[in-house]
Amino acid sequence: MKETFKAFVVREQDEEFTGALETKHIADLPEGDVMIRVDYSCINYKDALSVTGNRGVTKEYPHTPGVDAAGHVVASTDPRFQEGEAVVVNGFDFGMNTSGGFQEYIRVPGDWITPLPDGFTTFEAMAYGTAGLTAAQSVDELLQRVKPEDGPVLVTGATGGVGSIAVALLLKLGFVVHAVTGKEAEVDRLKQEGVTEVLSRQSFLDETARPLKKGIYAGIIDTVGGPLLASVIRSVQYGGLVTTCGNVGGAEMTLTVYPFILRGVRLIGIDAVQLPIAERVRLWHQLANDWKLPIQEWVDTKSLSEISNVVASLLDGTHQGRTVIEI
Image 1 (tube, rainbow, N blue to C red):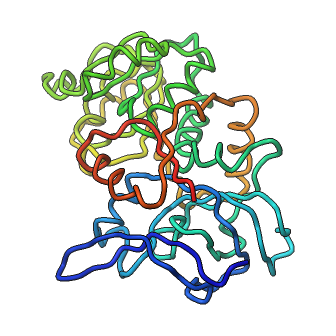
Image 2: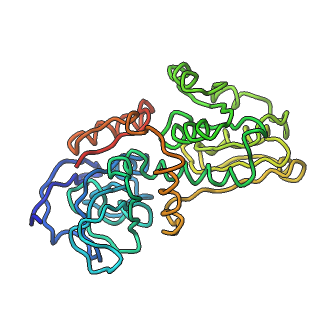
Image 3: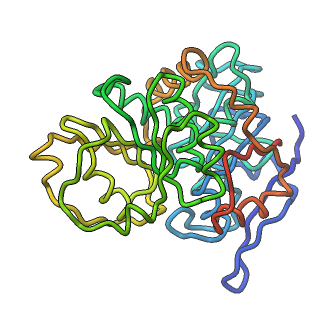
């Protein structure tokens, strides 16, 4: 194990935040039970916020972001993890106020670590990342109440990280999928993948504020939040289920209680940050086996030095799909 290593570090100067490659020492890492050599990380919207100085994500700088990491154990005082074992780290405080995955080595508590299923590579784990885990949670919740024969399922933000994986999982499981996107250029691609109907975000936002509309969808996987969620929830069938996991469209929404008390609609919040390790193990096993997708074919691979460019595309809305960072 090297004493020094490469890391992407964000620093603040004169209220401006810039990220660059730096050399760090092993002693710079936080205390923890397990040292991991990182093979891959990936970029999420939360990482983009951390890189640009959002204090709601990261309170103190300098900081190395990256809320996802996959690699191999190089040293451990936790008997649950052995040298050479392939593991993934995400959730909890990792990459937010604790040094994250955009570096060659990390040191974390054992309680933050999930062993990878047999045959599942560290690259595949980061091709999914937190986005894939969140999509898997959403689909898993939906399956508790909705079956393919019940009717179409709507996915909002269908070209984003969570949305695109949710669409693929639903199609693999035999659902008729409708999608909402604000990117007209992506309509043909979504249809080629098997999406039955692609709807514009604005078409929902421009509609009248009737408390209920025709019940079309057996379920909805929402990744956007805000007014869009308030609009689409009015089109859920009796007994349908809606999951929500994002707030890129806004943290607040205005709607009536009628979908809930007249149609028995259930609204389920999805959180991948505090998800217990046992649930993570179960969902990663699903993604590695019955729900396995050719996801490695859909990702763009970048280096640590290219993180700032990817962050810019995430924040201006031009980023598509998943980006894996090869460490």
